[in-house]
Image (cartoon, rainbow, N blue to C red; front, side, top):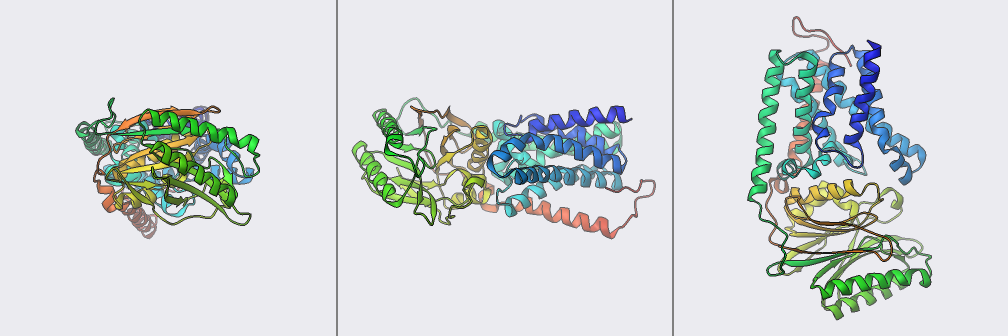
Length: 485
């Protein structure tokens, strides 16, 4: 028995690494959890705990080097263990429900639990629901459309439901009545969700165009090299000039809105004033909108800002970042939502990690933003996941996203999560991207209206189910085994 369980546990953990890692494989998210669930269903309580804990740690450890690059080693280990514990909670609690009641409807235990966990993480943790399984679908636009209804919680639910049904088939055999019922329920819901996604995409007009008529030309620029507070003019001036050259080149190609990355430079207030005047004059000379991310440090307070400079050479908006990445926890957090009318549509401003939070994205959706301009600074290895999380915000709330990232990807996505254009950032002399996009009013979505109502419903169901099981003690249906975690 042990000879079979050990390699099965290792293989399952390795498969899950491709689901919870920084570049998840979308189709594995639908099936990789099934073997782990099946092993837990078929094992005694103690053995199940060991299997799930080992597999979860193997899976979560894929992100340990990334965490340790962003935070102290002990904190990185703690976050990794916490991620593994979330998997233990979801799988072992689902096991208890499935074995205790032995009914077809227990197939919903696992997806309800994961959706509840996702919702609580998004609401309570400083990094939100980072790495949630729902974000794994950013490369599968059909499934991504579920976010327009119920957000990431909806995606998590459907993906986990399929894995749960497969696990019951593996554990108890496809001929068991409860397995057939579970499979039928999962198939109907998954087909309905994916059918909705396919129809929504089919009805969606294309956003990209080869000509400029009726479209807005966006320019994106990213130079991976940045200037710190102590940088000399000899170091920083070539960076500034490189941005100016890219902006001028994009303007000559008819770009009207140009987005630069987050914290192109960290400066003193006096240096910041000079930089703002310099790029305001450039915007006026070229007749373009320029958004640029900067850091300001006066020796006592640090700000992470995005300036929107108008074609008149004026500061149209100054946005302060809300949500800080671990290396910038000493920066002051903003609380404003900045929008500005460009070409008859409302453009919202956010910075990098802000768009990892569904509440932030929905706040702009409720304010009728048609486009989000997002300067960003990724960490290289997380560029795909960071871009994907931001993409989900656009689907949830029906707006276009223009995201320009240092050490990441310059990406334009439409309100349906489709990538209109994308290019890697680069070191000196940098990288630029020009794309024509049809900008129209935001696409109405159910999620913008109801938010995470579905996720909170799953939280209530999970709590009520736990209370019912505790109140019921060890009383079980005649013929059913008493089980424990």
